[in-house]
Structures are given as C-alpha cells and as structure tokens.
Image (tube, rainbow, N blue to C red):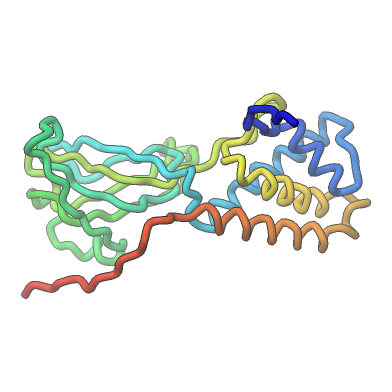
Length: 238
C-alpha cells in the first residue's frame, strides 16, 4: 500500500486549541474561548523558557564594539546568553581571531575600580533586565557591560549565542514557534492549563497534569545536544 509521501503535519492555533478543549471534555465554541486559550498558551511558552534550554530558540548574533563604549543593547527578546567571544579583525577571513571573554556577576562587575579603562575586552556582565516597556525610561533592553572598554573601533566584535523568547501564539491561522516534536507536549500542556479554568474539566486536572509531565519529559529528553561531552581542568597561570 502506498504512503502519502509527505511529512508536513502541523497544527494551526485553532486546531491546537480544539484538541486541548476536547481533552478537557469540552468544545471550542466562542471567541472568548479562543482568547482565553491563547492567553494560556502564551503563559505555557513562558513556562517552557523557565524550564531550561530549548535548542530551537538558540540564535547567533554579533555587536560591533565602539572605542570607549561600555554598554551595548541585546535584542529585546533575549532571555540569556549561552556563549560569547570577542572576535578581532572581523572584516578579514585570514587574520580574525575568536578570544574567550569571561562572564562575571554583578557583584564582581561593581567592584571593578576603573570601569572606563580601555583595552581588549576580557570580561562581560550580562544585565538581563525585563525587556518590557517602562513608562519613564522606554524599553528595558537586556544589555552587556564589557571590561575593559574597547580601545579602538572597527576591530572588536562581540559574537554570541543567545536564548530568545518563543514567538507569541498569534491568530487562528498561524502555527506555533516549536518543532513538530513538541506538538504533543504543547497540546497536553494547554489542556492541563485549560482544565484549571474550565469548571467541568477540573476532575481531569490530575490526569492531564500527568500526561503533560510525561509528554514534556519525552520531548525535552530528545531536544538535547548529541555531541560527546569532554570535561578538562582549567589551567591557572600565576
């Protein structure tokens, strides 16, 4: 018997919400039903960000460093940085060099006596902030503070891998910003969230929570680095 020859199955928002309602023993009937489900879905993706690294949300970025400038904005949807280096001679392919820049805490950064000293940046404090719009100061962009401040322009570039926020649920015709592998987990999670709000579904909450936890464990276990891990002691030079 012939197969379909395709592997493109996905769920748009309406279908995802309908499946979650059906697991609660209910039906999607009104515009408010869709609105409250979309709100729960956005909260669910924020919960996933708090659970740890979701590999599909890793982006690469770069910031051109300016002489004497200490603070630089990151994209507003940045959750955190995973790795970062300073690249010298970024415009040349033969002479460019990636050099490690150490991440330090706010406590360490605040104790640096001369934050305006200039040289090759060797330390960075990542001020994650909220990314929200503040009434008086505008957008609270996540930022990096480098030390020393760059001693020349057009020579250093800050390269990084970051975790970004998952995109919002959107309208009824959009699909979600997740790999297909996480569709069962997202449906299970949304059904659990909805069961906390639908009066006739509360008796299913325990079962739906268990199904959600199992679906998350399966998806998260697959969504991990497959490369071998090598641990070596760091050499200290005195």
